[in-house]
Image 1 (cartoon, rainbow, N blue to C red):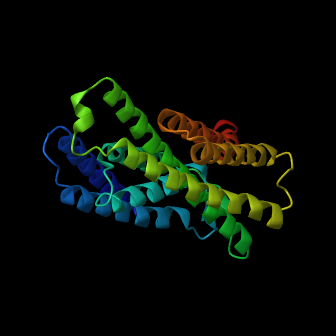
Image 2 (cartoon, rainbow, N blue to C red):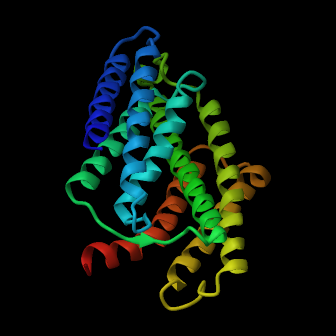
Amino acid sequence: MELFALGAIILYIAATYYCIKALTVKQQPSIRTIFILGAGATLCHLFWMGFDIVTTAGINLSIINVAALISLLISMTMTLSINKFKILPLLPIVYGFSIVVIAISYLLPTIYISNLSHNTPLVVHIVVILLAYAAFIVASLLALQMAYLDYQLKNKRPIAMHPALPSLMTIEKQLIRLLSVGLALLSIAILTSFIFFEDAFTHTQMHKTVLSILAWLFYSVLLWGHFKQGWRSNKIAFGTLFGSILLSLAYFGSRFVKEIILN
């Protein structure tokens, strides 16, 4: 089990090194090595999570494990997208985050056992909300890339023309698609919480439900503004980042207090 964690960290570090190296040269970078290293790292990450989450007592969905699971989903998505999209500048951030959460999960293990064997609606809800959150985080990474590229172009920096960087229009198109997918998944997650769970507005779940609804409303307005009012570039970028902060507070806020501070 420990070998998978160590292997994931080593391969993520190697992939990050080749990403940074590729970004320091002016010619079109070769991404085959980065893809192989990234794929190997995510495979080790997957096996590590399988051993760490599935226990004899139940499913260990501690806050650290959930963060590691989300980082796995994001790393997989970004690695599989290397050949199709110009996301090379984002990979060091994605892989770096995976390295950190795997290391924390290994060095500071936490336990939050959930028995999901006979609760199919809860399993569906958890899977959908994780996919929605991962979609919004990837969208936030694209938003950061878009804001950075817009700044470089406005200041006429040579790096804005690097072959590893996409055009602003391409980033925006990908960002809007991800926001649309994330909003659809978040809608399903909120709907299933109302249908299958009676504690959505109890004292312990109130803040999570309210913040999730606020994030849903915010993303809905953001997409409406883009399609109906022509909102572009930085307005969409910073709006995406703010929405992701709301969602992060919705899920990780209370879990952090209960598992880390009060534990």
